Image 1 (cartoon, rainbow, N blue to C red):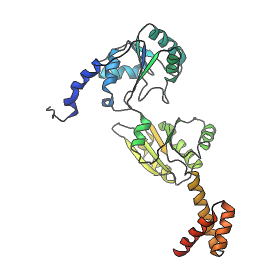
Image 2: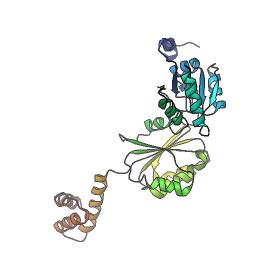
Image 3: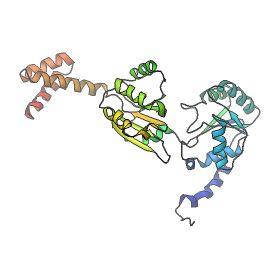
Image 4: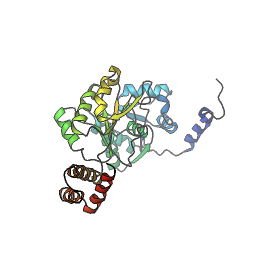
Length: 302
C-alpha cells in the first residue's frame, strides 16, 4: 500500500513524541478506550497502556482482547461495580509503592456512568495523583452529531430498570431546559421510549444514536410523537447500545409567552381587541401593552 504524504499514517512518527513526555510514578492514569471502532484509540493511551505496571479494568476479557490488538501485555486487575471498594484499596497500596496503574472501562471514558468513580475518589483521598487521558465518550459523540442546539446538556446516564422508579426519575426532569442525555440497553429501549412519550411533550425532538462508531451505526432524529413508530419500523433498531438525547423544556419565558398567546387567541374570538388583551393579561400575568400589540398583529394577519 502506498501512503500519501498527506495521509495521517504518514504522521505516525509523532508516536515517538509520546515517549519524550513525562509519566510520573505513583499515579493513576484514567484512560479512555474506543466505544466501538478500535482505531479510535489515542496515541498517548497506547503508550500509557504499554508503560504502566498494571491495568485496572471492568472486564478482563474485553480489555485483554483490546490490548492484544495492539500487541500489549500487562497484568490486569478486575475493577467492576461489585468489587470497586476492594479494588480501590488494592490500587492505592500499589500506587503508594510507586507503581503506575491505568484505569479503563469496557468502552469509552471510565468513571462516567461506568465503574471507576469510587476508585478515583479513593486515590485522591489518599493524596495520590490522577491523570486523565481524554478520548471516546458516547455521550459527547452523540451530541456532536445530533444538531440539537443548546449550550447546555444534562447527563443522566442509565435510568432505573423498574417502571415506577423510571417514571419518577423522568418526571423530575420535565422542566430541565438543557438537552438530556440517556444511556439505554437494547432490550429496554422500547419500554424506555414509551416512558418518554408518557412524560414529555410530543413535539420535543429526540435523537436515537445506536451502535456509535460501529459498522451499523445509526443516528435518527424525530419528534417524540414519532419515536415509537420509528423503533417499530425495523426490528434491527432494537439492537445495540443506545445513547438517547431529548430536547430540553422551553425556557420559562418562552413557555409563558406561548401560553399568553394561546389565551389571547381564544379571547379575541369572543371579545373586542382591547378587552381581550386586558383579560389575557389578568389571566396569564403577561404585560397588557405587549398583549395589545400582539393582538393588533394577529388581527392584521386575519
